[in-house]
Amino acid sequence: EIKRYKYIVEKVICKINSILYFGGHELIVINGQYIVKSIGDEIVVDIPNINVIDRDYIRSLSERALKDIDDNNMDSAVTKARTMLEEIFCYAIEMKNCEPSDGGDIGKLYKQVKDLYSMHADNSMDKRINKMLSGLENIVQSIAEMRNNGSDSHGLGNKRVDIFNYHARLAVNASTTMAEFILSVCQNNIEKGVDPNERK
Image 1 (cartoon, rainbow, N blue to C red):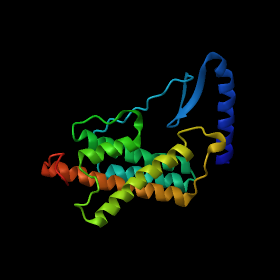
Image 2: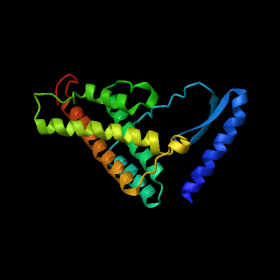
Image 3: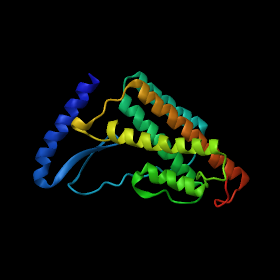
């Protein structure tokens, strides 16, 4: 029934867009919100302005995402997994008194965090740590791609990819681990008053 509902919604959006087209507009879905915009205009996704993020917040968001999986709503779970990473990255960036990069590009946000907290893998670090850092990079990239290709943030029609519950659970758990790691790096940095150019 969930798949049928999504199919009907996508068909309705296509029908609406076939009418709006003549006026130079289109209906799109971003983060569960329906927006009518001019064709060709780019919608800028607002970066959340985070005041406080702690482990309780991360666990709360994780639990809500896991409940979505139990409710057979894989798309929403993947979107929450991505949101969790976006928010922790923005928080870490703001803790350095910097502005998060525009556009909601999670890859750019993570690169900003790595630069600010000197988290780049290099030959001076233990190779096992380098491997883990490389793994974190893959987590960010994969979850961003899952959200773009399979979540509820875009109406994709025939391009939609089915997400199984174990894949969604992996995405949520991986995001939770990543978010807690970034939070630890950020808090350690604040407590020790480490200069952003000094290696962690």
